[in-house]
Amino acid sequence: MVRINILNRCGRILTIELMGYINKTEFDILYECLQSHVEEGVTEVCIVANEVRSLNPLLGREATRLSQLGLTLRFQQLAPSIQDTLERWGLEAWVDD
Image (cartoon, rainbow, N blue to C red; front, side, top):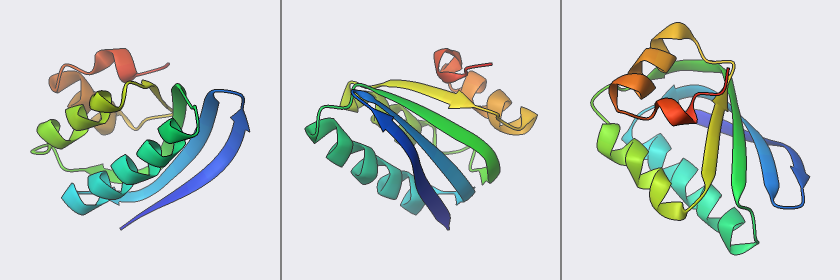
């Protein structure tokens, strides 16, 4: 289960916080959430993920599906294991130190 909190929206930039475990269902929920914001004009999303407990390492395809939204994604405050998973998927550009 994942919880998505909207922390801030400033023009075309949205900052959200993710909490919980991210599996296929949660990627689908995140995709739908971000898609609705894209329709409202958001072009960049900062994702504070220090409360993400786990990220299923077998779901690289679901993660890259997020890039189809045309957003600039930046994950912040990642646990080392989550950062390693994103980098393994070739999504190191999404990691914002």
